[in-house]
Image (cartoon, rainbow, N blue to C red; front, side):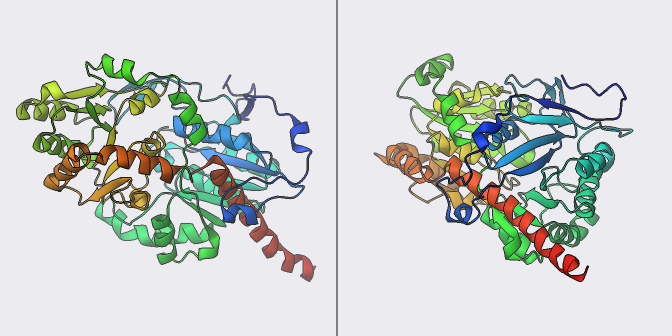
Length: 450
């Protein structure tokens, strides 16, 4: 299904679902949602948008299916790599990964051949897709939305093509600080200079949270050219998938009872995720009837297992390893409390995922892009990153104080009622509309001179 054409050069377009033109013939479309989205509802207009992605991921596929159902959009997805749709070694998990859900169904997609001499993610020339130039030049797109990040050659091919051929240019960003997770010292020095110029080069920045917007403004991006799109998770799809699972059966598979309390961690086992902080805090909290369930694999797994044994809590910890996409909603459904202790995690989607699942969240204050989601005492708590004793105290407070857990679960449910698919779609379409409008405004003086 995803082969190159016989010429070996042209990308092949795959329509994973039929597009019915009749459904778009009704004219003005109004969806309820955020005030921002309401200002940019389209009248008798449908935007043709190229969404450019590095590779295939579950979160992205769910969002793309949602976007493709919106009658205001005609979405074509351009993949620079089919990693994720095919089995392959994940360097961070340290195992071969094959996602078990249909990630290429429900939207129209194109595989643009990667001509890199050393193909792969994580290197500037690891993605070199020259076919993007012709795709954007001939594709009759109103806008291009880039999800690749600027540290790939293909980003710049697409960005310069969009500018040259008068196509609205948008990028998505989750950068909340100039902190580098790792890398050479010189990268940290030039990042403010590079990131600021990238932001100012594009028409619209799609910010994953308010802190992303604030950083972009500090780097010189005008506020009028930033749209906050606070969640990339398709809430309705996630909730529907959860209905397929039985909470008690999942717990039974872990050897747990209905009344046991489950603290849940869902992330790769890597140093910057700080899973050892949670293990130590859980042991220190000593909450009767509580169990720690960890979903994820990675280079720290053996170290986590050794720490669990050292602390003598093997009977109260379940390390599940890699949990595939089809099973994740069931694991969330069986949990009671979610913890993310990361020291570097700009805007992780596991936080809205957990809260859509009805789970209160204990969050490290280094997860800057998600702090705004936590209403202390009502939907979770924020603690100082690395403070194991503070995390242990929060575990005791939520799990042991009478009525605390149920009160916070109710608080999460109430808070997340406001996070709707309509809100997400209106903001996303509104961002595209602003990019196209700004392009038109820049073109008018040229026409006037002619």
